[in-house]
Amino acid sequence: MSRLLPPLLLLALFGSACSTLRGRADELARNGQFVEAASLYDDLVSKDPHDKSLVIERDGLRGKALSQLLGNARRFRLDGIDEKAEDDLLRFLDRRAQWNAKLSGGLESSLLEEMEGTHRHLRAVIVTPASQGHALTAEETLIRKRPLLAHKEMVGIQREMESSVLNSGKDTCGRLKAVTSDTGPHWRELVSRYCRHWREIAPEPAPAPELTSVPTWEGQVSGLDSARMALLRSRLARAYELSPWYSPAAKSQPELLLAGRFDTRRGSENVAMTAPYTERVPYTDHEERKETIEEPFEADETYTDKDGKTQTRKVTKVRTYTRNFTVPVTRYRDVARTFEYHALRLSVEHQLTLSSSGVLDTRRAPLATVLQDHLSESSLEHDVHFEPGEIRPRRASFTSPEGWLEGRVELMARRFAESLSLHWRESYCDVPMRTLDEASRCARAGTTLPTPAHQLLSEVLGDDAARIPALFVNR
Image (tube, rainbow, N blue to C red; front, side):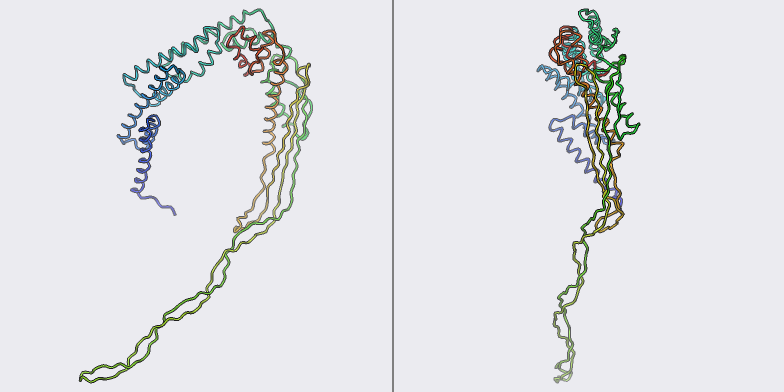
């Protein structure tokens, strides 16, 4: 039965816990870890908000933590390590906002100096490439710096950086639209995607002949009902829509073949089971004992009467002696036993083979994606109850075939997507390239450009060429 702890004991335990936490916080502070120490004092204050000494100590640690973070940022900046300086500046601004802290004049001055240093650095890594027409390169850095620029102190710098990047993207869009040396559909689609990224309008060309709409699937997977076949086709269709081969405006539909088989085998057998257990068994033992016996006896005793004569009388005395004897006793010993019972062993085995194949590039062998997988499970079932052996009735439990199949369909879709991307790269990236259109066609794969494609696009886009495939990732 549970009992409530006395109030004094509760206070003692609470005080001990706080004392331990405060000790850890003070140790961190002695080691110069002011941010961590202040966080522990936050916990202490939340537990005892009326203790002014805790609040004063916490506020003091917060001030030291802010000073330390800003000081670290200044030292990194003076050493020319701008990225680390801005990491500590971000931590400083995050903590200042979290604590709603007011800064001393010295910290305010240091913050302004650090903001000026950040401004200079961001102009070098964002404004400079943007002014050179490398808007995607500048945007990559801008995205990385957005947590820092999101603070209210940085709003002016943020606006300048975003304006610089956006204007650069718009200018580059106009420059790309003016390129007339290549009018192929893939290059024009690249220009269209680039301009849309910067909220500019550029005509979208008719789909290139390599591009198709969602395929039609022929064939059947034996053992899958209509609902599961519909799920499989929809997952594969979604994977195709995200692939380089797809265009929503394309008219042609490739024909792909689905084949395979899904089998479920069930089995059952009676099995003899044993369960060890321990039984306490009584037995008779003999125990040696000793007892003390007091035996009365009569003896003559002399005494002197009132006349001074010696007289004799009978008195009763007691003599003591011990004797040993044996008695039977009941004892217990643990004996290992085995409980035997019968159960039904049930088993389920799922086997699945899936394949999708078809021609996407008439110059090459058909694209083929294959998945083979199986799941085997077994479980016991019985109604036996035998507590000494911890045997209780149980029912067999198996993974649902629906859940397992859905997971395999998702895996097939991922493999299909990988096959589509690889097939595109082998068709249009692992070949000689001489034009912007051919390089742009390779970029549709959404992966790192091979050297020939990168060199061709760099002639027009400079450093942004390496970032062009990202425009095709989210189709």
